[in-house]
Length: 48
Length: 165
Image 1 (cartoon, rainbow over the protein chains, first blue to last red):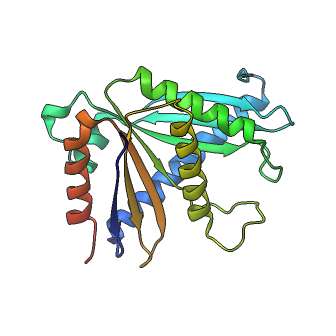
Image 2 (spheres, one colour):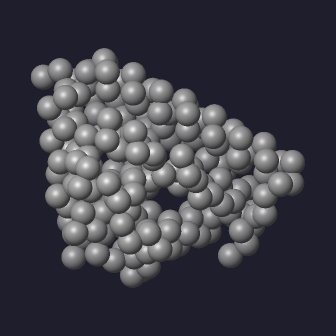
């Protein structure tokens, strides 16, 4: 049985906002790296 | 930070780039405040992007992505997987909702289909809605029953430390 709970942080602290923005920037950089390696032919495509 | 990643073709000329980033010890203890007795827990965050951003992606790629993520979840018996929606702009016709809300709705739909097709089971979800004051995004954590106490501790920490209310 799956359950779902929800929390709401309507007024996030500046600390949390800064953390989330930094995390998204790191994620953006990693995905750009993945895209570049793909276009250089360094990665195999998963054909399912 | 360790990473597992894949590229999935939609067989229509576009690809999904999908990655799971496993957070290091500092993040688990310093940011999420996980007690040391749970040091062996793995926390991994999902990243998803289209290769060609302005080209639609076929549903097949999303379905295959769900299968890949379900396999990762099955293989890592001690993992909590999170999905924090990007606020980056989307190239889409869906202009009535924010990019992050669109991503949240789409991922939720994909998850429900994956469960209904019995590709994955016995997964709990913790939804996290952040904002709208100052910032707006959405997140989800996927976890097994055995890890519920850890998720509850993280949620309590987030709401007590990171909310200005």
